[in-house]
Image (cartoon, rainbow over all chains, first blue to last red; front, side, top):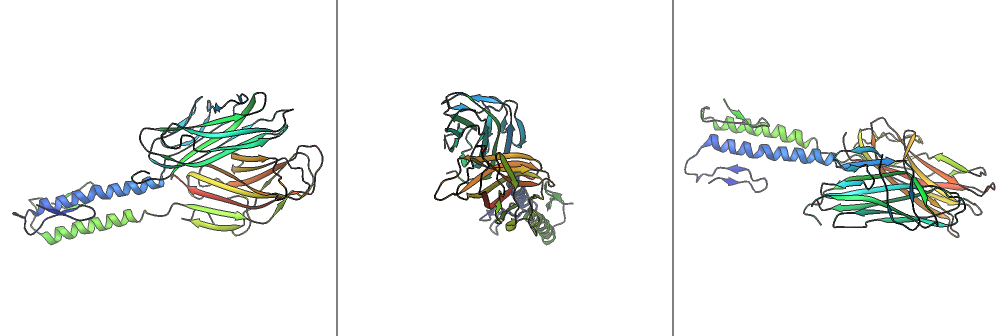
Length: 197
Length: 196
């Protein structure tokens, strides 16, 4: 009965083997090391190519007053996507597939509106995943005749069980609809979490 | 004639001469070279941060928006040859390797008393197009009129694209204003997330 090395589990024969079969022994060793090195090679390469996506859009879309609205990505330009993550659709966003911690960031430009005094604009991420269902939120004051920019960023964990769709929600509290236009969303995996959290 | 694994590791087959030392040496040498080449691919993730500190002042009164591309002056850190080190202040930072890069930047701004600035924005540019914005309205809060605005986003860089950090200040009262706002410390961080 061959023994195995303690760390990588490579097989080797013992003096107590009933019959020494060197060709089989060396083939077993070679065939054990081979896929192990390939797995390491793949892990190293994967660490340099993290699942990443970004998309941007500039079409004008209204957001009603005091109504939390999912930001539309209809007609969005997919700037980058190496894991089928970007969903350029009306209720789209970015789908996280691979387990790990992701850096998420987004901004939205909200048009100015004449005659409207101080008001707030709020931007938040939403997640369909089990963790951090509302992971980040920011808000800013707007002023008369002034285009407003709202930006949010966070680190977000995806368990790897199923998928986790990240969407962007916007809200504003003027008395009428405002228009949002330029916007961008980014998700890029920054780390694996061995064994989960 | 030995056989080989998919990675080319040789092993004896029953019809080979029973030369155990030679077979073991051949396998060990093959694994050694292969693991060595794989190990040579291990390196830190390429990243950098540069910063600037010299004040950039909105030196004349204005009534609309003034924008400045902010010079970077200091190499805070450069990992894996991500960029060429800054020798003289520059407004263009060239990530040297193609792929998707994550960027984060901050600016510190302050307003000298009396300014009527109504919005300050921070803008990340790739070449001549912005890809991320953030801003704050009513930025002036006395008695401490200093604050920081961050912005973060990812984008693809070809290896010859450049990244710039811009800031804009707007006052909307229609009244020429002064003394000016001053943009102070700023930094730009970049990290390569993919290789293509």
